[in-house]
Amino acid sequence: MREIKGTTAVCGLIGNPVEHTLSPLIHNSLSELLGVELAYVPFLVGDGKIGEAVRGAHALHIKGLNVTVPYKSAVIPYLCGIDPLAHKIGAVNTLVRREDGYQGFNTDMPGLYRALLSEDVAVADRDVIILGAGGVGRAVAMMCALNGASKVYLLNRTLEKAKTVADEVNAAAGRKCIRAAALADYHKLPKEKYLAIQATSVGLYPHVEDAVIEDAEFYDYVGVGVDLIFNPAETAFMKYAARAGARTMNGLKMLLYQGVLAYELWNDVKVTDEQAQAVYQRMEEAMGIHE
Ligand code: ATR
Image (tube, rainbow, N blue to C red):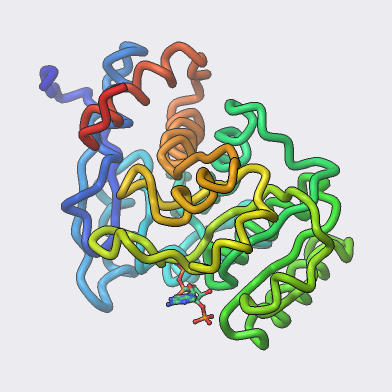
């Protein structure tokens, strides 16, 4: 731990739970690498306390906060402003301190975009399958719509939810590229190799054997299989996809870049690819992944 002084700025994470977060590792590593005098700490916020937490943080001159489950939407009423992208997504994961409160941003989706870019995975003009139409699936659909994806099939167990989300995202993005379908109807899609993004919580540790679609035939539609889960490092979805010959990627790089983008917003700095890569290595070590 570096020395904490009277001039050390504080940032942190608010959520519930927060014990297993990698965010302190990301931000404290960045501060060390960039020579920024900043300490980043997790703050557990109990039920019904999000408003108080935001007001208290502002009073304490906390420079910036990340927001995680279950407060990414619940925090919005307590902000002094919201970035247009975060507004479209309907979720905020980064708060930046202003004179009269915090302004909300979403760096999760730009983080996913930058993670895909870092792996040379294009979104523009690409046909995409998204699995899941919850908060995360909705955000991914928005990211695809705003970054020029061609056709985006939003597949969900509950078809009605996918339809509602598709309508909302098409309206907000001003283009009709999202189409809803039931998970079970994947075989009705045009047969090609898609960028497939797994955006449900199915397969998350400890349920490591589960995949949202366990039918091997589905994976013939997968050219690149991206799971937003990073624990386990290789999900059952990724194993199925790899077995069918697809390239695969987990959610750890998205986590890295959402952090990098938040860090850049708070500190008005630019993190280089080398610095991001150095942080990523520490994240892999912390997850017990040694390449
Ligand atoms: P999040 O914010 O992580 O997206 P959420 O809003 O609760 O969480 O959404 C969970 C998503 O995972 C939904 O798309 C959900 O499908 P339904 O809308 O049909 O509930 C999906 N999901 C969760 N468990 C699932 C399962 N066992 N099989 C298929 N889909 C599942």
